[in-house]
Amino acid sequence: MKEPAFVEAVSPLVETKIRALPVGSLVLVATVGDAAQVPLLKRARVQLRRTAEGDSAINLAASVRGLLAGFPERLKTKAQTQSDLVAGLFDAARLLDPASHSSQIVMLSDGIEESSVTNCARVKACKLPPPKFSLNGVEVTIYGIGLGMDSARGMALNHAWDTFLKQAGASKTNLLRTF
Picture (cartoon, rainbow, N blue to C red):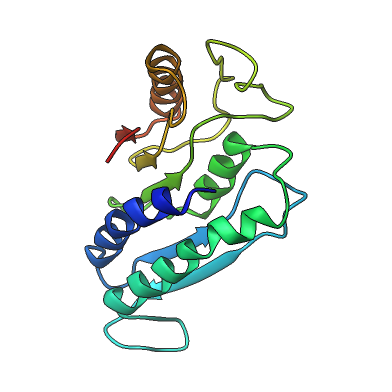
């Protein structure tokens, strides 16, 4: 997320996902990972037109693109001390509607968990703990996983997250290092 080129490359992919959402879908943009950072949160529903609760998919996609464009500068001002991705997924799982058959989680991350749960930054093969939450029926996409690592380490990290997400019940995983 610190690299403007990365954000610029994935923004259209995120926009496409938002534009494809049906009316009534919840769009939640949240920063996760570092309690030292002031969290950024945007929550809105896809509507036919702008309302107090949300906006059209096209306008929400443009709004999210603007938020993403500001991330690199935001992260320059304060160094990240940890990356608690498992906790972020736990929080996202609590917000999902279990009755929905089209829930999606989209993360922009290199996939390096650095927390009290595990530290993937200092080891060759990351070992994630068993998930303590359910992502049953949820499609999970992570853009940037393994970015900046050698191929072997990136593939091992990709495998660790794929296994973790499937153990949590994800219906589909899209773990993309390049796009």
